[in-house]
Length: 326
Ligand SMILES: [Zn+2]
Image 1: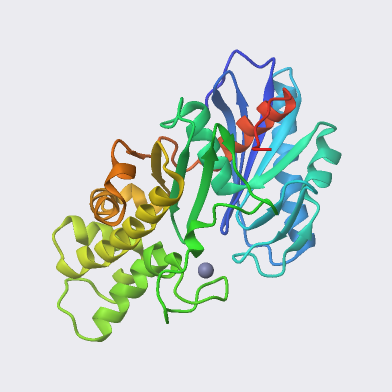
Image 2: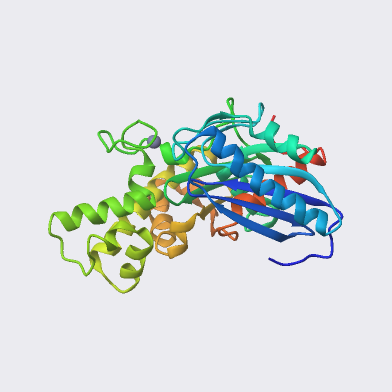
């Protein structure tokens, strides 16, 4: 929490994840207030209650600093209908459906509110003030519990026909693969996500593969990363199979879009165990003329990427800037 002196133009950013809601006040290019609410809502009522609690807290802090929230950006995991301002559903939030988030938040603050997918918000943050500044075509892969993705194409956030474009985690990778959270089989997410890494390690342990890890260790991608850094072969393999799948997907994305940059983000990528092999495989799996000169960058923004990106998005939309591809 740091206090900025520039409180004239304050926007709020909200990131709704599977386990917590992050609320920030953004002003003068930095976060000047942040609060995190653990998220366990399994119903619309409880969900809206948490939103109200977080937003009221932000409004009180803005008022205490002698200002008010000019706009709110809401980043949300799952299917966010940005045109209607409604969260349709999120695989990680059973019981929460069709929440009119924009109406709820705008009703509280009396200021405009905007809804967007959390991965799109994270890439927007990188593009406006992170590693992707100045690039016109950028694809982001975000590896956490699942695998998210987002696209900046021709200098605009690309959301597609329904507004849901960039779901890289659900690129079908395996013919008869595991069932994914989306209900389909063999998606990138089933292999490359934190959950996929844990599943690989647990299965190998069950089959008797040699490792220093216990079954309990293998239940956390973060712990597996520690073992991998200490040279545990199985732990390294678990990350390697993720990195190779990400590399194949990145190769396909490069062939499809001819981007300037691929950004790798998300909590699991912070292990530092994915980038090198992903890049190597992407090179082998894409056309040389297209791979030539593509930059690979690790995301600059960490835990607050979604909330900061949401606040930046709100700022741009409030100013009437053309954020989205037509
Ligand atoms: Zn899927």
